[in-house]
Amino acid sequence: MGMVAKKGAWRAVALRAAVCLLAGLLVGCGGGGDSLQSSALNPAPLSATQCTSIDAQKSWLHGYMVGAYYWSANLPAVDPAAYGSVDDYFYALRWEPTDRYSFTMSEQDYLAQFQAGQTLGYGIAWTNDPVYASSAGDPGPIRVAYVESGSPAATAGVTRGDTLVSVNGAAPTSAAVIDLLYPTQAGTPITLELRPTGASGTVSVALTAATVTNTAVFQSQVLTASNGRKVGYLVFNQFLAPSTTMPMLRDTFRGFRQAGLQDLVLDLRYNGGGYVSMANELAAMIAGTQVNGSKTFIHYLFNDRNAGSDYSEYFVTVGGDTMLSLPRVFVLTSVRTASASELVVNALKPYLNVIQIGATSYGKPVGQIPTVSCGQMFAPIVFETVNAAGNGGYFNGIAPSCTTVLDDLDHPLGASEAVLGQAMAYVAQGACPVSIASARSKRTVGPTEAGVHAAVPDPMRNRALLR
Image (cartoon, rainbow, N blue to C red; front, side):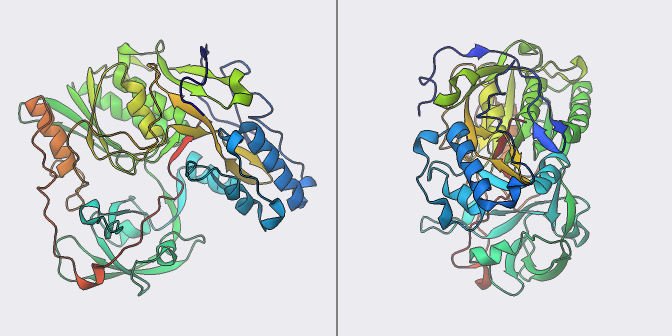
């Protein structure tokens, strides 16, 4: 299916970004007339009686995928009887390898993760260290990207940069071991052997799984570049529901505006996406008067059956006390920058200079409209997005503006860290600085850290949720 050429003119209608809860089910609300009210995009859920039949659930799911799935023309022909669960059948219906995005989870987990901003776990965001990745397929040692405040890991003293040596005594070289890092039941114990940054020895940390509150605005501060320019630095880790994220984000931008910022560095390296409405709000506050309530944010493209639902979403109107109205923005990215995060980068490009620092992003120019039936939330890909200039299609990621700088896990997030350092150097010099990608030398890797490491997944991430 093509990107822009697939359609003619877009219907320009405004979407009022909102999340409505009706009878316990997520439903579309506001703006766009009937653009999102087609039966294909909003199928009626099964009744309680129908939900007792797995065959009825599979039949409902197949009908939904035929009508709404963006790649419905390529829907695999699989026998539903061959799958023992509706979840397994859902994943069998994905058009792979193109579709690495569609997912399903319980309605309860969905509401907790994306609306309340809560997950079950230990409070650690893991990542493979790209400095040690090899062409032979080793993604690199597994290290701590960040730790959620107040989490079991934070209480135990786990910090950014700690290297995972073992999980319950087993080396982290298989998916089965990595799965232990993501518990499914509260109270699940785990023992981690970690090597702190720069240390020769290891420490043992015992943790117990609990509900962790995720922080969207992870860090914010005002820095001063070597040429005296005031630079705001914002680590924004998740596009959670507006009710969860909006107050803190607006307060942060009010502080930035009062500080008289001249530049902004937006750190999205660990932001795998979330609500499009929050991406719109964030982008609108950055661009300010250049887009406020009047310019196209993105165009939505649906499958051929739903061509009449294609529409344009405008930038939301934000308060003057939160608008920065900057002519440029620096965005820090990594392979874990995905979906709604990439949407911010792409949507801003027609209006201001977006200077991307770090590594190529994940590559997800498509999104989902969560749909619930029988207590299960299904989020297949149903739309693709392009910006006001008609540009999109970044399935292979968005490349940085300057020479690639790999994530610097040897330093805490802030002024001493290499990726932010390159952005600050650009602010001072007015151009991409000489690459500092090689400035971070490899540490001596201990014997328990050597060998082929398992790739760390990013659960419940890489999402662009329309509602």
